[in-house]
Amino acid sequence: MAPHTVPTRWKRGMIEVGSRVFAYVQASGVDPAGDTGVANAGLILGREGNVLVDALMVPSMTRRLVAAIKKTTRKPIATLINTHHHLDHTGGNRFFRGATRIASEKCREALVPGFPPLPLLQRFMPRFAREFPLLEMALPTVTFKDHLVVHDGDREIQLWHPGFAAHTVGDTVLYLPRERVLFAGDIAFYYVTPLAFQGHVGNWIKAATRLLEYDAEVIVPGHGPIGGKTELTYMRDYLVAIHREAKKRFDAGMDAEDAAADIRLGVYASWSDAERILPNVMRCYQEFRNELDLPLDLGRMLDGMERLRGRATDHTCL
Ligand SMILES: [Zn+2]
Image 1: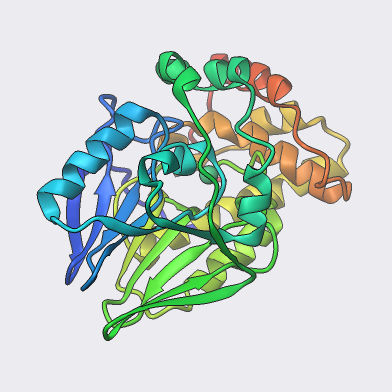
Image 2: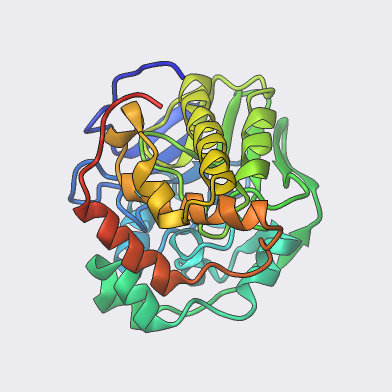
């Protein structure tokens, strides 16, 4: 994999990435700004109404997003598109009750049972614990199977769901061909370690490879700074390496937590949340055992990540 420099700070706020197309990168108060739960959003200004890409997580986040939208446009959000069901992308849906809310069928299915239990959320993301009891679900109102195009004048927003689970069961990406902007949702993580706790690493590699085929100039990841294909390749290479190294250790009979501690992360040790290697290896192990339909034990995952943070990390190359 290509060596690269890992930024520790990046541009935040409402950033124009194409004509009347914006990425919204949150200022989280910590650096690097990729801590769990802190996702990106997008805003596409239309003739009659605007399209919002993801609604963020807790009310304080979505209120700041709404304020930033109001500074950018007077028109309301007519359409909200959820890139996947994770709380940090859908928690704020209820702020857009008047909007048509679009998601893939699988994304909506994953939202129907409700958000994860409060104690688990509060343990997973303690920084936001106080706001989790305020969450209320607002489900998508329109679903699609694998392709959908939203038209507005001569602007096209192409939605695509890969047809398999990658980061989650219901991932959607949005591509604007005229502006050459791709909103990749959590199929792309830039300089923030990708997290596959509900994903399929092997398929995620395939999905990322497919995204590289878009003629995109700008790619807005679900987490981390705005980038392009270079950063997407870095992330894909991380997944390829984890998948390969996990397989070697799986075949050798090593347990997942020992494997996660044993794999040398190289430059990726500097990506934020490096301990996510544990859930990523655990999901690879489930994939190798054909047990991906079993949910990962999140309590065990969090315990293991805490232990991993305490273990010495090695910075040599994979
Ligand atoms: Zn996600």
